[in-house]
Image (cartoon, rainbow over all chains, first blue to last red; front, side, top):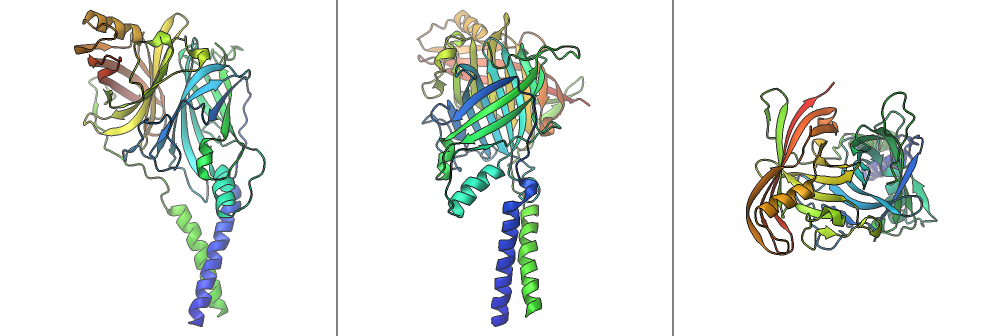
Length: 233
Length: 214
């Protein structure tokens, strides 16, 4: 019996040591994507979000009330949002659909909690472009759900995260123009989120703001110096 | 005793790390794709959207009417954009068997003297495909319905069908299984009714022919 208890205690200590390694794992920590910024678009997760729906398993409110949940087994890992995007002056200049799903790259040992994040952004009067992004949410979830809720540590201040980590070689997201002025555009983008306050997971829905830093070359000819008007009409 | 402790510790430590590494953290239920080979090459696949059941939400400026939908799905845009010529719609997307396989969004915008729409269709188990084509959808829908006898504010039943894109509708890009996708697509609207509130009944069909570019 004593032998067994000793063995059980050792296993438990081993598990705790492994969890500690995962918590502090530098491989899954935030990377800093680099991109020149020629336009900035801001969005909010909260009352000003136009629509937000998912598989109804996240404990986050759907918006608006009555919007269909993504309950079908083929799509219940997806999250769908519709955002009003504002420029630096606070004017609404674009509308964006954001489709997110847990990525196959997710691995707590090597990559973190990776989400495939796809944005379709439309600037009325200008055109549309598509952003393909890969985002590591582990640093944010570690500080909120693990540190604040499980380890009962207090949340302090406002924290900023830069979850974007590809697929471009510099760690930025990839922008592909589709219509209008952006038809042949190429570029990069970086998403930064700011969490103002945190007590419980459902708050992630109401206290978060984000910024898309964009660098879009509208005319993709090699000698063109024309850069974007991604936030202007 | 010491050896037992070390063995137990390593078992817990390595076991948990191996489990975290090898457990499949993401499982998106996959439905086999219903695809064929096009006559002149390429992979042909059709996605369908049934209105109004598959509409999730839509938002648009007044210039995008009559793409107006039922009161729940219809969202008012910010005041800065209220009079702009744009529409953003979100749908559940089905395969030819009628099984929901993904979600899609359609953004229509008038810019630089022409109008165009972009689709992004995400099939979680396979990736996202993006296609775009020029065409004034609201005007085309309005004209087709008017010719068929529809009057705004009244209920209408019948059948009209039209292709949306004018010129070279194309597959722009894709991710994962649709990565480096190129090709063409056809967007066809078949409308069988309009309610007195302006909600459309019918089907949007997206026929894609995709070649994987190198």
